[in-house]
Image 1 (tube, rainbow, N blue to C red):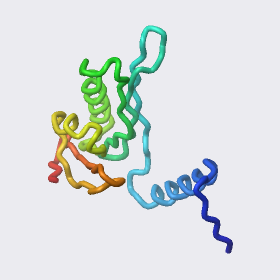
Image 2 (tube, rainbow, N blue to C red):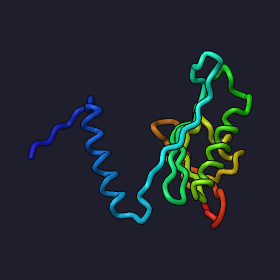
Image 3 (cartoon, one colour):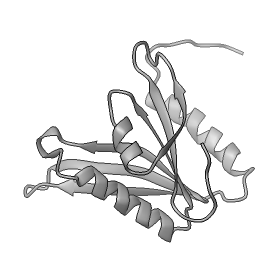
Image 4 (cartoon, rainbow, N blue to C red):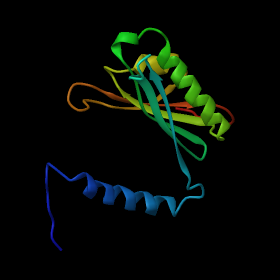
Length: 144
């Protein structure tokens, strides 16, 4: 066996690890369909000004990214994207949602959107915190 450490891995090499890990994981769980979900906000020239990227898996919505261009923030666009993604997740059978954010990003946004903090990584990466949240969309309770 050869071991290679690098600070510049090739995307295709990372994909091999990720693809095989997903294949292994999905072969051992009862609901093995992960379905992407994305909603975009475009301006009149079709430039992306914001959006949400997520995936649904069984009972869970996992929010991957939510971004709004600074020029159009404070117009409740993020709230609409989040609500629309949650509504679609409910249609897909989800009962819960999961998201993480840094302390300098959207912690209060998620709290105001009904998310409950379940744990925090301190000093992540050095001076910030990384917050993990869940929300009950429907059905059984999730307790932090």
